[in-house]
Amino acid sequence: MLGAVRDRLYAVVLRFPALLARLGLVDRRKGVEAFDLAIPVMVSGGFRTLLRVTDFFMVSLALGSAAVAGLELGFQYYFIGFGLALGLSSGTISVVSRFVGAGEDARADLAVKQSLWLALGITIPLTLVTWFEAEAMIGLLTDAPRTIGLGGTYLRIVMLSVSARFWSMIAARALQGAGDTRTPMYVRLLTIPVNIVLNAVLIFGVGTVPALGVAGAAWGTTIANALAGVIFFVLLVSGRYAVRLRLGGTQWATDIAREVIRVGYPLAGLQLIRTFGRFPFLFVLASLGTPVVAAYAIARRIMLVAMMPAWGYSTASSTLVGQHVGAGDAAEADEYGWQTLRIALPTQVLIGGVLALLARPIALTFATDTPGLTVAFVRVFGLGVVAYSVSRTMRGGLRGAGDTRWPLYGTLLGTLVRLPIAALALPATLTLTVASRSFAPGLGLGLVAVYAAMLADFYLRAGINLFRFWTGKWKTIAARSGVGAGGD
Image: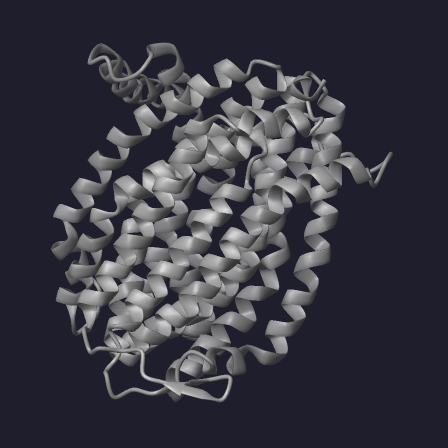
């Protein structure tokens, strides 16, 4: 029964790329193939983002704007681990997709194991540092005592699960690189409801379970992350899926680990630049008031739902470009990259437009004193969805080919442009001291400067990633990597 409903729903959804093909916007076969790979990633990513929205919604109801701000600041440090995981998992999808394209399944399996060992080496020290220094880390971003206390509590607990989250991302990307984007979706669809129920019970308290507030949100996420990690481990060890985690045999292959790191470190750097770039950006927002931080946090999570198509098509582009490069067909890889962008843009505009139109009623559901601020931030994010889609999709194609440095350059340049513009929002009387030198970067422009900074960052990164893919120089990098037929 459920299978029949699922198949009927999927047939309806597939009418979208068919419609675009009839309009002459995409090649029907390539569009359907990209769409088929992207949909499970969109669904699982969308549900995970909805989970974060639900977290913020429940915390706002229970504890108000200060708690929402604490979650947002705590999340920024969690994103350090997330950024490293995203870089390493991106290296995994690139290497696995090329090995699969070349028919070297055993090497693809070995790449998964290398990524797991690398993940453990990174996450254990992160967990220890945040356990002992959580409040001090939050205190670098704000001087509001309640926000520091709540943010530190959240950060300390949620970082206990960073190793499991790291592994889940690696396993999901390995499966996606082999062309299986549905299994990660099914795992997420199982664990996300568990996360939501746990959060509701632990935040508000039910029966004999006490209300834990922010700590409850953290424990719910930690338990769900651990559950997802265990499920992925069992699935990949079973040998029944597109890639396998072999517990015995060769434990370390330097050449494969080196390629995973080569592809992954620029993307990890990219994410770390974005994460560390958010710290001064959040400092600017905090200087404008805790309600501004809360409004930005809520709006960002609302619009991340709208931006999920870009994640899906980025993964599809990585898989399709990587597999065709691995098979030695760079021309077909190039065509798949452009076709994926052609279907990504209309999807992104459609979903982003709907959420932007519904910004006010959505914002009013949160327990915030300034819903107008949330609506304004949602609309600014809405103006950036096209650029976000272009940036993510083209970055996915470059990642599939192993060309990950230019997305790093784009992120670095975007951050270097965004922060000085955002600083103009600071009051002209505010003096900062860096390296024993005092200066006043602000002009008192307020939120206008913040909005301009966000949009400049979006469109600059999109332009750089689009230009790099257009040059075709990624084909040479893929050939030099020695992974798959492209390296023969």
